[in-house]
Length: 122
Image (cartoon, rainbow, N blue to C red; front, side):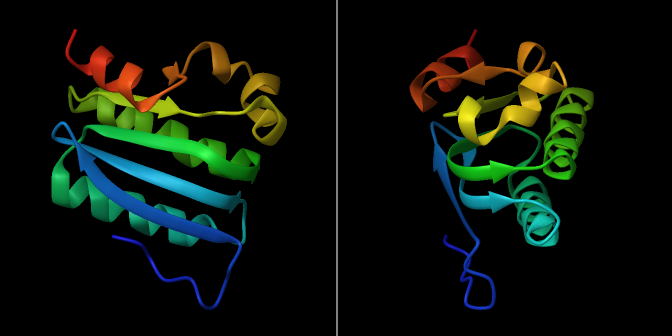
């Protein structure tokens, strides 16, 4: 399901189910101007499908610290509910805030969706 973004073309969100796990694909900018849409989308996915979540950030062109805080919040929520959480396709050049804060070493990062889904089965 793709969320229409006529009012703000800075962000496109889509969701799918892969091996029973919700995958949210993020394309564009994650910052204060798109935070509410991102928050709402993630909340709907969690409400509809439970705590497991893969965020595909390969299409992110910029991420600020507020967006990273939201990602950390969902990671913590998933862990508290004994779910699985993964980030795939994270690119340093577009998500430097993850490395600056040291969270890149703590968050579950994977190069591909297949690697993330395999880790969920371990």
